[in-house]
Amino acid sequence: MLKKNGIIEYTAASVNHFGEAEAVIDNCRVIVPKLLAGEIAEVKIIKAGKNISFGKIVNVKERSISRIDPICLNGSCDSCELKCADYNYQLQLKTEWVSSIFGRKIEISGSNQFGYRNKIVLPVKRVSGKFMIGTYKKNSHDISDWTHSCRVVPEGINSIIRTVRQLVEKYDEKGSIEQLYIRGGSEGYQAGFIIKSGNRSVKLILDALYHADQNIVSTFYSASAGTNSVIVKEPVYTNGTGTVLLKTDFATYRMFPTAFFQANIYTLNKILKAVRAEIIKSPDEKILDLYSGCGVLSDHPGIKRTCVESNGSAFGSIEKNELTEFVVSDASGIINGIDNDDYGIIIADPPRKGICANLISAVNSSKAHTFIYLSCEPETQKRDIDLLTNYYIENITAYDMFPNTVHIESLAILKRK
Image 1 (cartoon, rainbow, N blue to C red):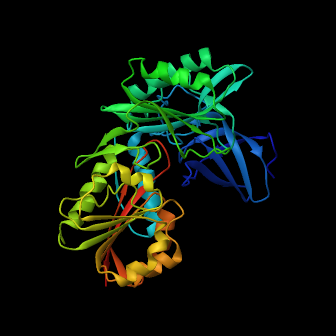
Image 2: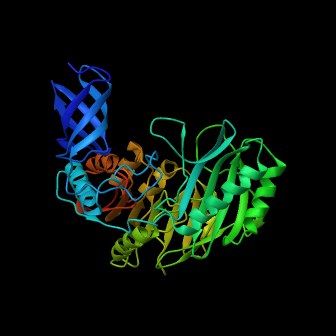
Image 3: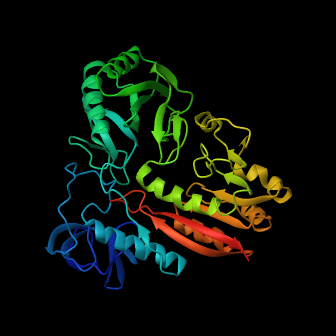
């Protein structure tokens, strides 16, 4: 029987959907992060159980040909679960994972592996007087301090992080800042703080940051909700425009910090191309865009559409026109409208929990001939699709929205039977 702190020789049989190696030893499932399938390692058991145990690597004795030395120098950061694997292997794993969920072969479309994120929100904390900024360590509220640049964000964001570190260490002695928010790109960045309480030093830091030659076009602060939520509420703008421009291949959006936008525009452009290919097949059809955000998925010239989004600030990013109706509502709040209107195409991009059963039922009984379902959680997407008995899957494509992590975006095109 496995014992806590015991050292065992471990051969990784497979890698699960969380990016962890698994193997069965003495009839016990043993999970070890940061190992690839087929690798042999000395492993220390850190938690022993009857049916499942957890371990950590002591030494990798036989390496996979797909193992790489991580380029990331922030060694304790666990946000990129697959950073020890080369990119082809990452795509292979994700292809296997999403294919196993749907029971059919689904290819995944790759992305730029580095510098792809246009947005990041990082926890900030003083520990024994030392200022720390980075990401939370796994299963912890301890911060992995980013003492080096992060490879998944562009240099512009890394430069802002370095400047913030200098300014906060100098001016924020009370530790009033909880999180740092940065979003933007070539058109400029928006930077802001989530703060515990009003503090004159926060505005001083934001003013200095705005004038620090960092291509920052807007700064703000927002009161903390008292949780680890990264949602910005009621921002107070201190410098600049209040928005930042984000460009896809098809349009430009003025984004407020309160509104959602995909963090990887390179991959978003691929998804938009696929969605547009469906829309232009039926250019005269009316579209219902559920969980629409700022309406990016259905944003096509000359199309009549209804965008439904619970966060009304997202609609401030869209150019108003007579063909678009904006409805500020939870998606489930317009169920009767789905049954009573003549939408030819329905689009949905829900959160990870997926679509509620009542709304799925309304889509199933609607008049729409096409249902386009974009998901950041293929397992809940599969659950929802199984309830759409009046539709069949014409095509599913997976997209690597967040390279080096275990996350998968999947786009399903469904047609009425």
